[in-house]
Image 1 (cartoon, helix red, strand yellow):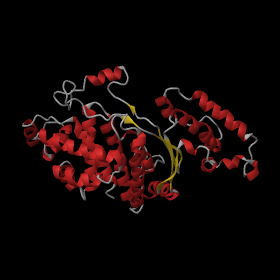
Image 2 (spheres, one colour):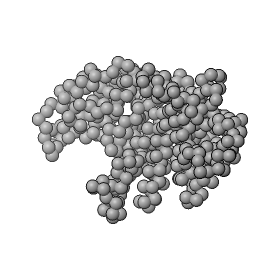
Image 3 (cartoon, helix red, strand yellow):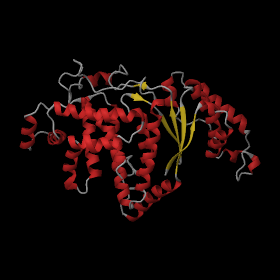
Image 4 (cartoon, one colour):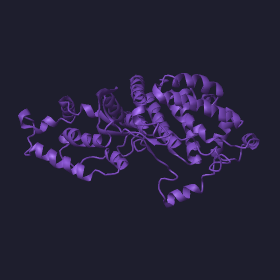
Length: 407
């Protein structure tokens, strides 16, 4: 369903085979008269390639982070078939001029996946009776299954807090381009921009927080060093993760249409929770979305609605974290796998130090509904400080990887 068809390094840029591969991806030959295309274009393809290639170079930001972000934008070139040539001759070469040790990977999505997803959306619109002005069911949620591969792969960009490690682009429905620079870049929700919004965020930093956060060595949630978590140090993990997404797709495609759609929409929602849990500096956001993530994980791992509460508590139990979760994460290769095992052990130890068990954590999650009308929850939480170490959110990525390998 999803495969890495080419890993490109700077030393590969003299390989004409890569140029041909990129040109074939975008069907550049349709612009060449020698192929007798069905529609003839009165353009000089080489001149247009040079024109729009130089346009890209002239507009490419000088700042390295801005440049990486700009890689996901579309070219102004009106001839989409020329895009492969422009990518190879201008975009890729400019990328390597800035990140000579970086890598570019080309992924292919099997057409059968796209065909199934689109056909099912049309089928549901006509057979279920759920049709809002011609829009497929749940068509405006952003969680539709057609977005799953994009959402799952974008995890590569933010999986290590607070390091921006890659830019994943989707130039065609069945191809993906992954840009891995040779250095990581640190981001911060709370300090990156001196804006009014950042100023307002700081007024809430104490909510759902450690009592002493920002005032002692315990501090905010643990942050990775961008120098150590250089994307090139993570390529083993990146490859494993892409293979894991592929295996997940191969199993999901066997589900009946309704079950598959329900499952994938839940997975997409889980990725949204994962993003905010990992990337947020503000404890309230990070922990709230972490509990949302565990909610969806318990939905996916339980057999019925009535068993979701028990599954939620099991996911946050010491036995599950130190045994079943660790066994899964031990399969993650490279440096990141070892770090994630350490994170699980560390977060579990902090939960013990804070006197928290899975039942208390469930009650704390349910406090998001309010504190009235449930005397048992009020008493249970009232007998505890409700302090939850910020590093509980380090469990978010391991739980996501566990879910992805559980199908």
